[in-house]
Image (tube, rainbow, N blue to C red; front, side, top):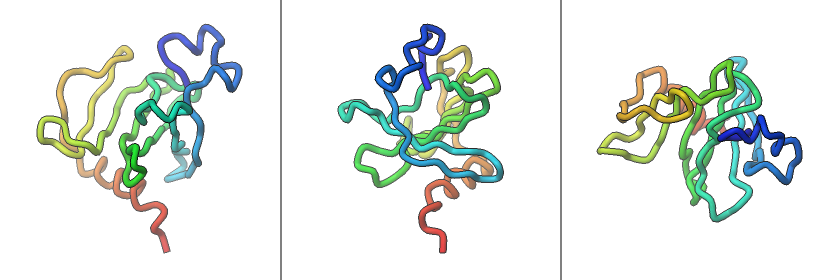
Length: 129
């Protein structure tokens, strides 16, 4: 998990160089989803911009721990290509952003029905009977 060239520089080869810790993992439809938290409690719960693992899905929680903050999807190149936010931007909540070239493109997009289903599944995972 890294960003801004930290993977290439080797800084992430040691635990001390990493800004994130894994809280837990779950598998949905063959996709491993990793729930993260920043090691520094003063940092916000954002996901990294890049992943060491291709096609990874990272999830973070709101600071109060009561809901998912965001879900980020990474491509085969380890770069983020889609990020779902649960908090409102411009009156849209939840919504998603498309990422390209390591940066989010302008615009907030309402979730598709498929994205809504995935988000609800992740949010309700611990409530399975």
